[in-house]
Length: 428
Image 1: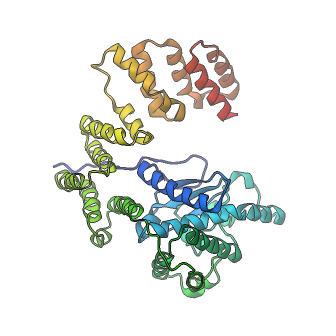
Image 2 (image 1 turned 180 degrees about the vertical axis):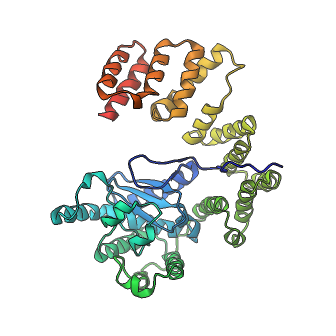
Image 3 (image 1 turned 30 degrees about the vertical axis):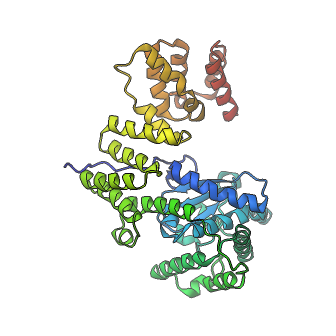
């Protein structure tokens, strides 16, 4: 077996967000779907009428934070060290608390009024999280040095305690207890101590001291019952195992219970170049966990990374049958469908059936290139002109761009005109 030299990507699609200081983002439908469900539970019990989103960052630091667009950023490291879904739920609730309590607006006003900082609009205002004790710990992580030097990530101790209290109240409303939060805090404190971040330094940081936070949790335990959602936790553990397997941490993998240990091992073997062992363990899991359709997606990702494209597409499609809203898988199938031996009618069907992807991801270069090839096969002149133009807009000045858009918009093709208008609106 030849070990692949390229970086092995199984369930992740990475890209660097331009003009913003975050690290690479993880796009994984299973994880996003699960976190969105937790977020919805938080929003419902607190009767929040705000649009809050979540993004996953490829970063092993145990951290989460919220920006001034009401987007909660979750590090992959946080997921790996949460003992159960409740710990992740509590972190989400804390960050939602910053949003619901208008801490970001208050922080922004403080910065504006103090006139200490310039170019406020050029940087995302990063809020401190439930867990990060000091800005310097984020260096090399998801926040840029510029953001750190301007101290945009800091809330006051009072605001952090308010967000802690908000999270605890939320757990009471959902009727789950807070034991796993204490376990998470203990893990984080130990890691900080290992990095030389002493308790004295923790005491003077912008975040409350760990002991103070744990005391708050213990004093707030009002509910004696524990409405633990076993189905949630099983889904969380598979997601956690996926992240741990990708991170290739042998010690952490060995501590997992079954079947999650086998899942993480299957991914680790794939990363190490042992496809046979990887698929052997994964196939065994697929037979055991017949209701977990995301195992099929992982198998497809592994096959795809080893160059077995057609076999991978087959398993991607099986996953899509159960999860038709998985756009990331749909994109992969679309981009890698071989049209060489297809009829004009079949190519035309692919062109029309995937327009939802084109409208949703019109800035995705791979989708545009695939559509350009399809348009050429179908001799769709107006579409060809559009794709050629839009794929090269970085080389076109603003005036020429709008002039060309005006010309293209004269098309009688309703879908093309709709797409052009949508692009114009988003640019303006």
